[in-house]
Image (tube, rainbow, N blue to C red; front, side):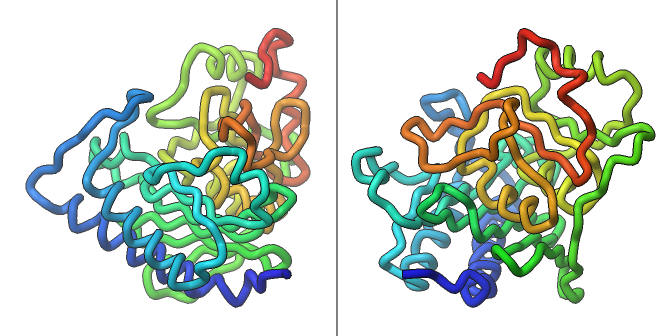
Length: 273
């Protein structure tokens, strides 16, 4: 049975804003505790508050669709393998940006279909009051505050100096080696899944992610990039797939159309780890 993703989209956008409001109540408080999870990543009360809002809201929206969230107990793969669709949620992507109070953190909600493809995506940055959203076949949009949504589209590389997105919190030697091979480029810095959205709206030609990420980090923005005319692929050129057993993404590239020829600059020993 198919799901009308366009019909679901307004409710999911409202839910992302509601979760963002829960995050902001913690963000604007005098202090907040930061815990450390088993993978050494940070966790705050804001992550948990957002998670409660989203899980409860998605269940009210359609209790038949399971939810996979970073901050909830994940179903074993033996159960997930039979899902024909599911919600993929990161209640607060960019917790490091939250702790640093940079404002560059997001609420990410995606709907993934039976083929492991994100077909609906909502990314909301509560400090910026900026919303990106898309549903398969209906285009991608950005909305700032109460302004009317604006359609967005990736930029095509024209042979001049490329604009490349670099993370504020994640870099590393592998990325440095790649960028050294690129040569001249303009850097666009941003935190969380907003990096993918920069490519989706044509503000950058390429976002190379040569480091570890999980599926909930990318699913929502991946749907937006797709609908904006771009691609999110591993280093062999295959689109990122979802609902894998380990939920770990390979290294990937987010590119416009036509894309920057990044393969020419990729050192041969860098694998899609």
